[in-house]
Length: 207
Image 1 (cartoon, rainbow, N blue to C red):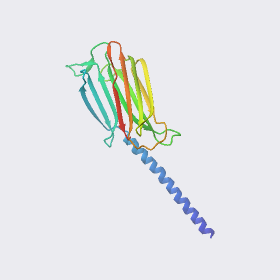
Image 2 (spheres, rainbow, N blue to C red):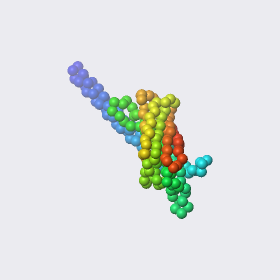
Image 3 (tube, rainbow, N blue to C red):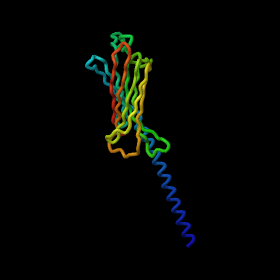
Image 4 (cartoon, one colour):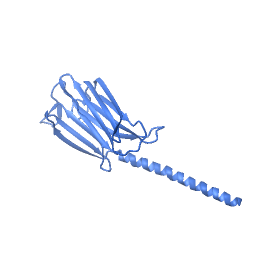
C-alpha cells in the first residue's frame, strides 16, 4: 500500500510539473507573437493637397498581418521647390508640422494584462525631410484612448517655444476587449508669422 501511494504522489508531481512547464512555454510564445504584431513591416504613403492648397502626407504603418498599427499625418506651410522637389519654408515663420497617433501595449509590474496605451505626438521641423527640429511659439497635443467603445483615459501636453509635444492616455482598468482599441489626437501648431494648424490623427487596432 505504501509503495502505491508513493507512485501516485510521484505521478501527480510529474503531471503538475509538466503542466506548469507547458504554461510558461505558451506564455513566452504568446508574447513573441504579440511583439511581431507590433512591428511595422510595411508602410503606405498618400500625398494630396487640401482646400488651402497645403500638401498633406499620410503614412500608414502595417504589421505582418496587414493591420494598420501606426498612422502619421503631416501638413506643411511651404512651397514646393521645382528644382529639387524638396519642400522648404516659404516664410520665416513657416514650419513643417508632423502629427502622429499610435497604439501600443506593454508589460508592467503589478498589472494583470498587457496595458494599452494611446499615444499622440506633435512635431515641428525646418523642412519636410525632418532632419532638424524648429521651435515654434506654441505646440500641443490632446490624446484620448477608447476601449470597448467608451472613453478610457485622456491626456494632453502643451509647450511654448518648443518643437515637440507628446501625451499618452493609458488603460485604467482590466477588461476583455470586445471592440478594437482606438486613439484620437488633436494637435496644435502656432507660430508668429505663419497660420496656425489644428490637424487630427486617429487609429483603430486590435493590436
